[in-house]
Image 1 (cartoon, rainbow, N blue to C red):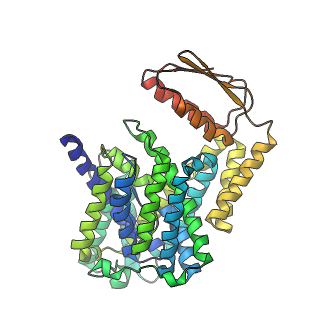
Image 2: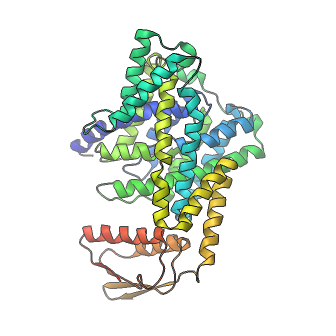
Length: 454
């Protein structure tokens, strides 16, 4: 590793650490789990997953997208010690997904379903965290929350941000509470002096089929969120490096298995920390690893400082995360993609709110398939090679069901070949596939390759 890369990774890892710290605590709070479990998941996601993953820019840890599953799982299984078994089993499921080359699973879920899932999670976060951020009985909570939200929202509008807004909110809320005693101990973070001694290890004697059911739900949703993040991270990576999705599932699976074994929350690759890592100038995967090390040092040496943080501030961090996942502009974005996409998006949200995360996802997927089957015959394409040229001919309508196939075809084309697409204007191309082709064309042109769209 070059010295310059090492310095850049250290710098970016510190920025990611400052973002991850309040999120690890806040997600554990939202999940009705021990606060230490969020920190443990962040440490394992950074160090273990970071070392095994093939991604140079993604950062893993506890995810807001899994809070609903964790809350319901703990309640269904009767405690966090039994839930740890589900996290362990979910990791083993993900390892299996990776071994059977299941990394393409994300290509079979349309964008409308994925964004509907994230929007529903955002709504649930807002609904559940609002009572933690505002109170009729304890006015100090309201003061801390108003100040915290003002800082977080106002900080985003500043042109230059040396440190993340959530961290500033945490620091200011701690200082305010120390000066004016706005809230007492029950409304502050409560970590034991030795965080590791307070971990709730899995109870293997409670293993049953309900544990497997919860584990499978975690594995599917965590894998989808990870694959979505990996795609986004590869697109944002200035060097445009590609990540092996199968290796990523293996890395996430091993991380989750270890997290479940030692009392941590489930782990995914997460978009907020990944985008922060990239914008902070990360060069290699060591940035993610270093951020996990900073979390570990924090837990080992200053747990008492963490206990000064008001829970209301963590709730405000989650309220802003929830809003970003479910902001109203998403409705217009889906409408512009087509009324069928809007219907799938809204149906997925409603189904998740009424049932649960996994059922809601598959209800949204079922509706998307129905819309596709109602349209003229499913697409078909031909690939012809001619010396140094490859002709990709679209002869029938293209649906999202063909996204994985087309992605593989494009990935397999040698980089020294000219690529010519034919028939794109004569057939219906699903928006997801169109975006895939447009991205391929854009990246190829940047590298000096000849690609034509026709």
